[in-house]
Amino acid sequence: MTTPKVPLVIDTDTAQDDCIALLVGLLDPRADLRAITMVAGNVGFDQQIRNAFLTLNVAGRLGEVPIHLGCRRPLVRPWESAENVHGDGVGGMTMDMTGCDPDPEHAVDTLIRLAAESPGELTIVCIGPLTNIATATVKDPTFVDNVKALYVMGGSNNARGNITAAAEFNFYVDPEAAKAVFAAGFDITVIPWAPLTLERAVFGERQRDEIAALDTPLSRFFTRACAATLEFDRSVGINGTTHPDSLTAAALLHPELIRRVGQYHVDVETAGELTRGYAAMSWGVHGVEPNASVVEDVDGPGFYTYLCDVLGRNFYSARAFS
Ligand SMILES: [Ca+2]
Image 1: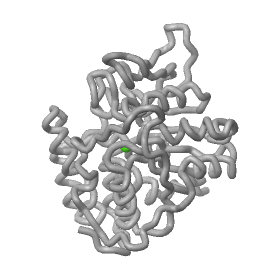
Image 2 (image 1 turned 135 degrees about the vertical axis):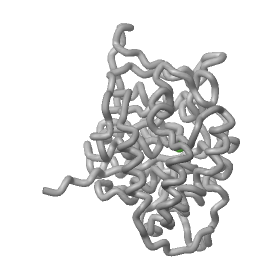
Image 3 (image 1 turned 45 degrees about the vertical axis):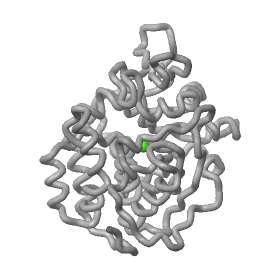
């Protein structure tokens, strides 16, 4: 018996590990990736679009999966980038972008349409700020019920942040959107930054060399896309590249990678003087009902082996990239 495919959309601020998460969605035989939707986040919006097309190309899927452009800024705040972390998000890779045009439908409308076309079946892998998702819930009151589940990369589980001491980047950039999404009634699984990502999804020098030794276009793409982040991570005491976005996609497609999940009430700070974007994850003793499953442990080596398997295969890239 073949395992049924998982229908999904990846909502992304495409830079570095977002690209690797897209590769997972594009190349894993279990994935039925119906669209890529873009949200303002890591790097300049137009650069994110180029990064997504570069990723489609190296996966041999150029022209097969549509890219839809969504919200170009957070709900109420000015956009802030993570370009200091990611550079352009792909290590300076370029290719001929002639004819690489996003789909004209707005990403929010795409999310609403795809969810409505197959109610209760579509999972959205949310690996950027939650602006598009929050906007979709406002625009279409049936959206929440039509979506099967959200897999959200964001926040830290009562642990340190990355953009501030308290906050992880995705929730920090658009805390109002994150707060609205957790209050909306979705079935949500959270992959937090800390401690999970830092304990289970950091690839150090050995892994970097092993991936480079795969010597495929995908492994070369990985090495280039992750180079800038590696430099930044070292400067802040993380000994390798961080992969929370690809872990989020992999956890959806391979739940056997998940070792422990806790039921939490997750809410996001929007008003704090020092804690904007902080995810308050309450573990059941504070009189609030759970609204999310927070992943507490995963099979880190299993995740790494899985990614090596994805990156070790060869696909025909329609266009040269360098
Ligand atoms: Ca991201």
